[in-house]
Structures are given as C-alpha cells and as structure tokens.
Length: 410
Image 1 (cartoon, rainbow, N blue to C red):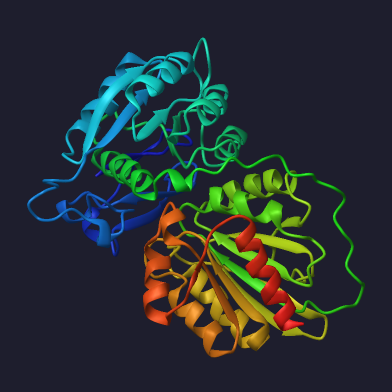
Image 2 (spheres, one colour):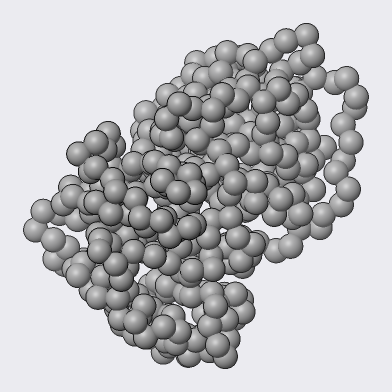
C-alpha cells in the first residue's frame, strides 16, 4: 500500500501484511514524522468506531442515515469527499457549500447531522464560520483542511470554538491509493454522529492569571493520569483550563500524537489555563498545580527517589503507541498507592483499562466521563462494565469529582 506523508509529501510503501493491529504506525522514509494508518480491509472499515455500535450484518435497515454537509472551496475535493461518504449506506450527503457563509445558510435549511468544514476559504473562513454556527445552529463539525495539521494553532482554535474533531485533508485522495484515508474519514464522521450534540462544548477563554504558587517542599499529595487516547485534544481543552491550580494535585496525560504535535498543544493549552501546563521530560519532578503532557509514542512512567517523584521517559524502539496509558497508570499506582487516580475522558480500545484496574486495586480513584458525551466512548463503556463504575458528565461536575478526590486523599 502506498501512503503519502502529510508533512512532507514523501511516498511511503507499507506492507499491509505486517500490520499487527488495525491501527499501524511507522516513520516517514524522508522526514521521519510518525504516521498512523488504518488497515484497509473489510473487517476494519470503522477503525475508530466502537464495535458495540457497528451496523448489523444486513446493513442499517430501519436506522436513520447520518446526514452530512460538505464544505470546501475546492470543487474537486467536494466531489471526492461526497463520493467517499456516499459509498457508505449509513451516510448521506445532503448538500455542499463553497464557503462558510453558504455553509451557515445550508445548515439552517438542511439541518445536517455532521458538517465537514474547511478552514481556508474565501468570503468566510472556517474558523469564523464555526463561531457563527455554534451561536445560530449548533451542529457537529469536523474541521477538514490542508492547513489544519494536528500541531497547528487553527486546529486547537476550532476545537475550542466547538468543533468535535479534525482531519488533515488527505494528500493521497487524488493519488494511487486512498483506501486508508477513505476508512478514516468514514469512521470519524460516524464517531462524531454517535457522540451526538452533547459532544459540542464551546470552551470560553479562561481567565488566565499567574500560575498559583504551591508551598515549597510540600510533596505532591495526589496525581491524576488523564486517559484520552483518540479524541484527546478537545477533551483536555475542556478540562484543564477549568481546574483550580491551588488543588494539592498534579495531572499527567499521554496524547496519541507525535511529540512535535504534543509540543504545540502544550504551548496552546498553557496560554489558556491557570494550571501550569508543561511538556513532560525525562527526570522532571512532579509538582502540585501542574499538568504534564507526553506523547503516547514515548514510554512514560514515574519513579521515586530522594528528590521526590520524577517522570521517566524512555523512547520506544518501535513507534507503536498502544498501552501507553496502561503503562503510566500502573507505574503511578506502584508509587502513589491510594493517592493515584485516573480520569477517563475519551478512548478507543483497552488502553487505560488494566491501568485503571491497578489504580483501583491500590485504593485509588477512577473518574469516568459519561460515554454519551465522549467522541470515542469504547474505553469508558468497557471501564463501566468491568469495574462497575459510575460516570460523570464533563464540565463542572467533572471538576467537582476531581476536587472530591483531592479532599478524600487529604
């Protein structure tokens, strides 16, 4: 299979038979950026969708199709995206628009379930359009552009204004092989539709003050691992700026993104949070009132020495991100025992499940976001079933749950 790098455009030849999982990661042969691709088989047409939500073998008879509005200033891209979406019987393209102004008119008239929205368009760009959409007619929006890479400022702005997900406009759509991109787009549109309107949250600009100082020499009383896997950017944007920086706790999360993209997101989140947001580095001491972000492509754990509890990062021999949260949670439980905690925000698969079990066995707490409000809900559903946990809605109730955990640990 031929995959074109979204960063440099280099052509990469990938052996599908070597895929160990449906989601495969590898380094670009030219720029060495870590790329992720789905295995293009009939069994993995929905690589990001929960198997619980899959259609019955006979299709989706009796189920309402997902209505999609495609917005892009390129006639060619609109045509290609429409053709891709139309090949799935669970999706129906109900309209198209060439700019943000037309998109707002179409949304009000057609009332689509999901909108794919380009960023760079004439008349009205996508960022301006999403602000109007969320005020006039809140709709599930997936940002979709060549300018909206995972590490770009525009991506994070779009998520803050209400977009539920984003996709890099695939460079391979008009080339030799776009099957994996086809699968990815289909699955992400379905995920957005399944998440529903409850997944939309406009994140108001935080009143960012100087980071509150914590008493010097005071050990960190509790550490929360925030599990996000996929759908993590928006989930973290909705939580971290709302946390009281004076809480006697710290937070750490491994994001399913390349290290360079985590660098960019750390800078963005730092500018929108009163909580100190730091890029996790090897040997860094965990302190109260801070949030540490790492890439799932780094093997992250914690260790204790005479100076306190330190972050331990070992760069992986392989580029596989699987089990990053499990590894971090287990090591945290070993060190912090009943002062370890986990927050499950959005997840696909079982990364975070066994780690959450380790925390519970050690006497710690696990907070689970209501799956109905998650972009990717599979991990949360599995956690509720396996451990009999109750769920918490995002926003103030999630912050209250974290505060209650801190009070209990104190």
